[in-house]
Structure formats: structure tokens, C-alpha cells
Image (cartoon, rainbow, N blue to C red; front, top):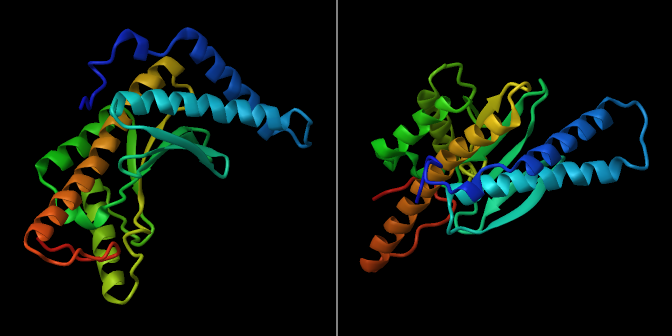
Length: 234
């Protein structure tokens, strides 16, 4: 499974026509957002915006996981794709400051404490391609180091689970990668693809650990662990 996009064939590069369509969709959407009144064309402009970003995300997703399949949907006006294999979602749009913004949750975050150096290496490679941050939902960590922020979010989720919140890890925060609004789209595609490859890999490693642990439990004749269990034991 390629994780850096370096093995991508020419057909996986961003064609000029696609880049132009993406740029037109972005310009159209910004004009809609800047207007004070609605227009009959707004729905068509929004659809062009969403389809353009879905196309870009799908191309990035195929580079990250050539053997996976993807569904496309929206959350509000933010387009995202969802891996059929992992269930992980990856979105691409704009933040309030006008920067390009890619987000990814960590679906099996309750397996974080079982991750090896390989997981953390992929995480720390992401800043090569964009500005990486973590937006926690459960902790109010002021630490700058993203690893410590993840640790604090994990501890907060585990504590919430001990207090009866069985959805604590479902509410786990998101990894966010941003780029300046002046980033050329060709560069953004290349950097975004490399970032998404690693974000996918992080979710894959968590998914794989859960799968392997479940198989070991089944081989020992143990009952499957609850999906919402906060603590994960080997």
C-alpha cells in the first residue's frame, strides 16, 4: 500500500482541465458566500463546488488506498469521502480564515495506546505537507506537541468512559491539515494527497490492531469486546 504517492502513475496526477474546473468551482462558491442576496444559480454553483471537491478527494483517496472504495457525501457544506473498508472520513474545504482545510477523525482511537513507533512516524511526517493540528472534543489541552494533545484527549475519553459515557471515543477529536489560500492548486493536490495517504494509514493501523486483537480473542474462545469499550486490553 503506497503511503507517499510516489508510485502514482501519470494518470493519477492532476490534469489541467480538472484543476481549472476546481478553480472555477472555488471562485464561484466564494462569490456566492460574499453576496448579500440569493440567486437562482446558487444551487448549481454549490453542486459544482461539491462535485469538484469530491473529484479531488476521490483522486487523493485512490492514491492513498488503491484497493479501497469510497462513498461521497457532505456535512453541512463540507464535502467528504468515506472509506468503505475502514469507515474513516476525510474532508476537504475551507476554514473560517479562508485556508484550505483537510480533516480526519481517528475511528478506533481507543487503540491509540497500543500503537507502535510506525504509527507515530506517519503522524509526524504530515507537517512536511501542510500545517498539522489536533482539534480535541473532550480535552482542553494547551500543549503544543500534537502527540501530547492526543494523549490528553485519550485520557479524557478514557475517564469519560469510566464515568459511564460509552460514546467517549466516538466523540474523539480530529486531525486537521491546513494550507494558505494562495497555495497553487497543483501543489495543494500533491501535498493534500501525501497528507491523506498518511491520515489513511493512521486509521488503517488502528483498524488493523482492532481486527487482530479481535481474532486473537476469538481463537481463545473469548467473547467479543463491546464496540464502545473505552479500555482495550491485549
